[in-house]
Amino acid sequence: MTHIILCGCNGKMGAAVQNFVNQREDCQIVAGVDISPADTGAFPVYSSLNDVKETAEVVVDFSHPTALSSILNYCRSHSGTAAVLCTTGYSQEQTKEIQDASKELPLFYSRNMSLGVNLLIELAKKAEAVLGDAFDVEIVEMHHNQKIDAPSGTALMIADAINQVRGDGMNYVYDRHSQRKKREKKEIGLHSVRGGTIVGEHQVIFAGQSEVITLSHSAQSKELFAAGAVNAAVYMTGKEPGLYDMSHLV
Image 1: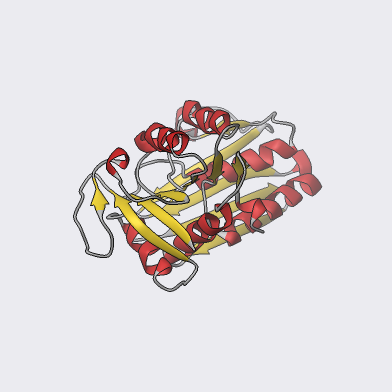
Image 2: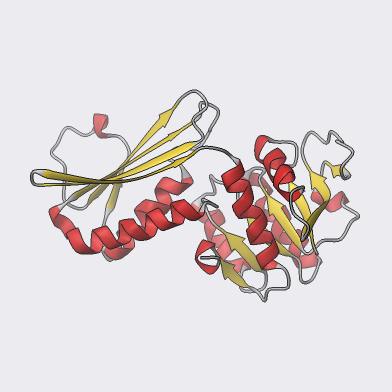
């Protein structure tokens, strides 16, 4: 049985994780953490991770990037406790903090917990390897009007994967309105759309001479990401220090 502490338990993704855990018999949420510690009765809820009295094998985080350091410190002070970091919007410095901490802690970090999205990324890498610089790459991501960060972490995951195929020689362009010039070959355009209740859609466009190839993924429910997070939590139980991601599950 995997015991979970859920950070951000009273948010929309926290609720989705709870619903998914309730459908399983191999894991249980023993405590929650939220800045609005409303107690649902299913488990105790605290305003700070440091106040949690229950023990758990894994901390699952769907809260806010500012909570990262406290989560890593909690795992350090509770030997063997892993963390599944599902929050998006980490800065470059925070990403480096995660990488450094994984040398002593078992950490699972992915900007998107969907199996389908990670397959999309692998397909995009394959397409880039085949098509090369003869095709321009543009990424379009669409999310609900409550999402704060832009571009999405998933869009950056896709861009980073394609850039890796190109030997990390690509430049990311976020605002063509400010650039009065022709598109350069070493560009990856990233475009964000925010509106309504769109859960998450991503398109990778490879535009060549007289032909266009488009790879796309559409998320229909937040349950998709909750399922990935819970699967990751169960997977991380008892793992040795290191940095894990969706590739370890697929």
